Image (cartoon, rainbow, N blue to C red; front, top):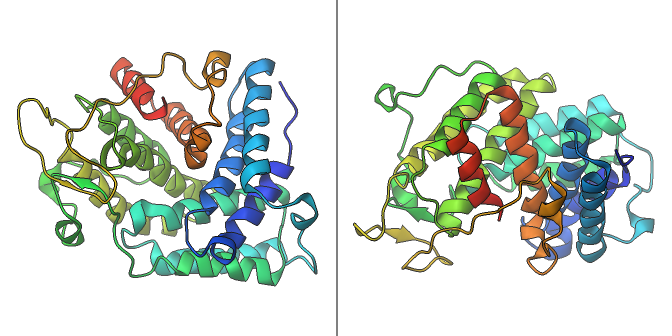
Length: 319
């Protein structure tokens, strides 16, 4: 297997903490999260040397396009002790993780940053960690997400998990992963839309973020994040059995348009070299999700035993 490059972690963190400062929004951080996901996906899964080398090459190409110059990736100044950095980040997550904001990106950014900092045994100055805290805090009072099928943003604000939803008891990551795998496998058709295949992909990454927090020793954050996560799953269920040729659906989105088309199916899976022979650069690495969605799905797959329908539906998330 190809050796792991810790610069994926260092530069990934640098991109995340500088996202708002460099671009004025929350979303450039996706590329940093993608680089970190690539590192850990390789570490936690067995890929052939050729496939692993391709993943690393693509992640580095993404960083060359969206990253920071090499001289800026190492924090300038005294590094904050790891335990102090983690305390600042987890305090920020505790303030925001109890509500559904932007389909869980505060949890996603926070958890993957914590995982990278733990792997590096510390990273960043007090200023760096402060910017990460500001990024997480900036999700406070933001919308649940912008694109939805068969529901609206307003309805989701009042949507809460109920006993009638039939959600299983979730006390640990294995139980959460198994729910996520079951939900993914239950979709009859996955449409190419931010409100569908992209939202389903974020069900994978949002749930994975909660699991990461549990595994890093923060079970209280895991449990606090479950209700808003289940709210998103409940909203997704409203689009689970939609057949647009048979019925009218409602669509609330600034980017998706009717009629929706079925998502493209990936012939190869991400652990296969063939997957990486497709041009990922022209699609901008799907904003880093070309690494994040596989990292999260394979995590859930280890916790459960995906049925063939789940693996099949995953192909429509990653094409």
